[in-house]
Image (tube, rainbow, N blue to C red):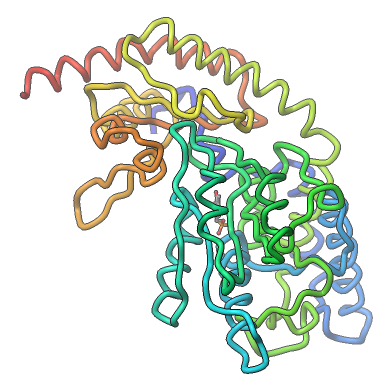
Length: 393
Ligand SMILES: *Cc1c(COP(=O)(O)O)cnc(C)c1O
């Protein structure tokens, strides 16, 4: 590592650092408060108490009852529990409904690959397309609903572009047809208020490490004691909906992260929006042929996804990293070659432009100077990579 290189982390949508108060809250549960919450003695009671307090903090952030919060290992497990849990229940003999699930083309892999799995189990899946602005095609959603549709699963905010989905409209459609509605809210939680007493949803996935909590914790909010098939069998934990000894330190951290989000996320969102817009406008002003994805839609305030026509994002990513700037590209490496982001392709972006796109995601440690530094080095970097690319044609 170069000794004094500036380190600028702009990949908060991938994961976030712990807030110091989150870390402090967790420490006792690694040391003296190690009891198993299922034990009836004094050591167990401390763990049980900690779970109760954390559950209340998570519930408060979303205006739900603590009993509706089921702790999981993270967003991926919450999404799996929602989809497989609903599907499992609807396959019971006494169920009259069917095996059709509706989702979108721009979901996180933990939804899409779960759907692939469920298809092998006999599920039928419809993938709703999105407009060029990244938002779901509501007319298509309505048209795809069938008498045997059991679940609609749509993300709250997209992890690559930050685009917000019209949750109210989707919720209304789901309710009108008496279909369960699941929301992957991992990228919206802690960034924008999501109150489930105002906006009806049946199932909501959240993840601790995306909101300044530790990795290894998350939750599925299950409204009104809805019945789900459990993924993990093996104990009475989480009211038999998720067996296994609870990850108490991580859950305590998760609760603290939710508490912090409730206090500060509104002002923080505004601060980040100003920085994000500064970055966006700076890029637009200094780098020709840069294309901002989701610009015309409501977005969470910390995310900027932009493509630089005529270069490959991976090269830019590496060059930024050499300057100490951590960002990401939406492309996925599969069998040694790069696949353009499925999200951008669904928005109608050309494969070439999709492969030239970079995601900047800002967070609580991001300062004005960081954005200024990026704007200082980026234009020259883009120009150099473009001319290199040109020379190799
Ligand atoms: C990160 C992410 C997940 C997965 O959450 P993990 O806690 O990392 O398993 C799911 N959905 C979205 C939109 C995400 O950004």
